[in-house]
Image (tube, rainbow, N blue to C red; front, side, top):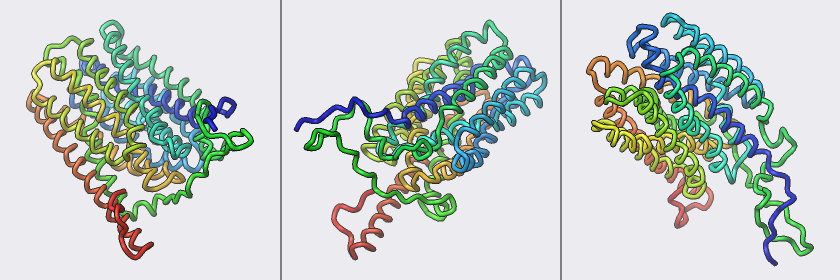
Length: 443
């Protein structure tokens, strides 16, 4: 009997959650990525060095990454709504006070600490919630949610680059404060913690309008096959595994330098003689690459595995940093920026999927949050060290070369993770069958 297209099935609410997460990350990361575009104006207005101003951003990254462990745990226990409301208040206040800052210490408190606390309500709570709503289409759903950051990087810095020549950076930060406050409050009404919290089954994700399934003898559409029982590890149990610490190492070496291009590519381009608007296009180029990378990576990860996909996108980041280091004109910097965006977008998409695959969904917020807090907080080092190297040498070349080496170390650990997965599979097969069946060497 011919397959039937489902036209009456209720659309799975998990996709509302995924697209709401897209909106949250578009707003929050759009403002974050604008810092590099506004950095020269901030430095000139406050009369401080590039290193000093970059330190405020580094503190901001450290604070929101470190607190992601808390926001992830609260999301697991109380749901994402209360976290998003707190984020709306803190981010809105932080950016408004940043616009009013007259001295460096005031910007440090407003941007570094207050906005930093608010930003912890974005990446981990949103994507941990998406992980909880999906299994079979988890990678595809994460492509939707995480691509919000890349969409923002395409649009917002470009707008800021054109406006900063006409409007003060203070006015721009004030406007962004209002946008983030309203946007996150609206999103908090749409985010639901899990399918169970809305009276749905997790396996309802496979029944969507437009899906084609074979009808039963009486012409009715059968219920989807039940998902296999998933074993979810608590945060403490996950931390006792070798896999957890390998994953932590991978993302430490990935994120240690991940914000360096987003903050310093625009100033780097201006040093090559580019106008502010043209320099801001580099951040947009990163966003275009990231949008493509995030859109494709989740689907690819669903098919070939998250760890294989991670190896590819990390390799792209290594190449991009190498090109930055030897570039002497925008003709090579723009393509490398797109390449870096594909790698950066891919790694952020694959990260929650890898956690969900290995440790389950029940405690995804706490585990993703802990990994993000440890590895992500050190991302604060990259922009600050690049500014210090620039102020010391007058060039970003050494910073880019060191970044390539750090990402290469992360790539090596991906292969260690895969080897450890094969070891675990062999151990499980031996325990079940007393021997290792043929073809069981991979995960």
